Length: 401
Image (cartoon, rainbow, N blue to C red):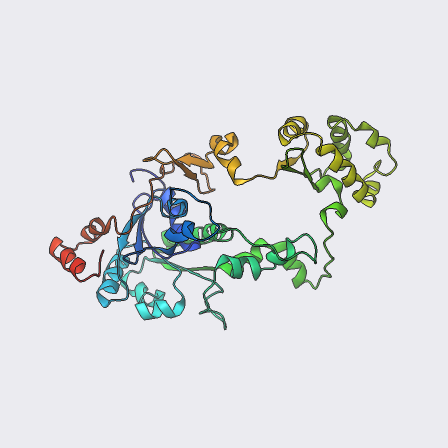
C-alpha cells in the first residue's frame, strides 16, 4: 500500500453481503492489507447483486466495485479440511479476522473465536450477525431489509400515514452504517491491543444497529411513551419543516427551526411578505395551528419555479433547506467531489464512494478496482509461506481457484 494509518495491518475478510466486508473496505481505505476470502466460482454473492431484477442496468459491476475495492481475492473452498487449514494459517498471522457466517457455519468450519484465538493471541476477531450472539435468534440469518430496517420500527415509521403500506428499503441502506459500527469496534479493539498486547472479539449486529438508528423513538418506547399518529404531508404540524414540489417535479425540504428569525427572511426571498401580516402566520404558535393552510400556500409558491431557481433563491440567506436528491444528481455534485465524498479510482476513469471518515493529516489510499474471483490466490498463498508445489497441488484438488 505504501501509505495510510493502517499500513502493514493484515486483515482477513471472511465475510459476504454486505456490512462486514464493508468494514474491511474502510480499513483498506486507511492502508490495511485486506485479503478477501471467496468461494471458488461465483465468489462473494454481492458480485451478482446488479443482475437481480429491478437493479440499475450497467456495464459495470457497481456493487462489487464498491464493496471489493483495494482487496486481494483468495478463492478458497472452505468446505474442505485443507481449505480450512489454509484459512487458519492465514488467521494465525493476521491482525484482524472479519466474519459474518452464521454461528453454526463458523462452528462447522472451525473458525469461531475460540478456534482461532489460541492460534494468535493478538488477533482481533470481528463478528457480525443478524440478531446478536445470544438468545433464541442468535443462529438466525438476516439481511438489513428485515433485521435492521423492519425489526427496528423504521420501516413502519417512515410511511406517510397509517393507511400507507410500509416503505421498502434500498439495497445496503442499513449495511453501510452497520459497517461503520463494526469498523469502530475493530479500531477500538486495536487501541485496547496497543495497551494490553492482547487481541479480543468484537461483535455487532443488524438488529442493534437498527434500533440505534431509530434511537429517539426506540427510547420513547422504552419510556412507555404514547405514540401519536403521523399526519400526511399536507396536514403536517409545521409548514416550515415540510417538503415541497417544484415546477420541474423535483422536491425541496425546508428545515427552518429558528422560525422567529428565519420566517421573515423566508417570506421576503420567496416574495410573499404579506404572509408576515397574516394573523394566521404572525407567530410561531399561530403558524403551527394553521400549518395546513401555510403548506397549501407554499405548495402553490414552489410549484411556480424549478428546483434550480429555489436553490439559488434560498441559498446565502441563513435559511436551512435541502434538495431531495436523486441518484443521477451524484456524478455532477460539486460539493461531493470537493469534499472527497466521491473520489476517482487509481486504475480506472470511474469514481467511487469514499468511506465517511476523514482524519487531518492522514492520507487515504486512492482506491483500486475490485479484483476478479481468486485474482490474488497465488500471491496471497506464497506470502503466507506456501511453496509453488503446494499451491499447484491445492489448485489441482480444487481447494484454491
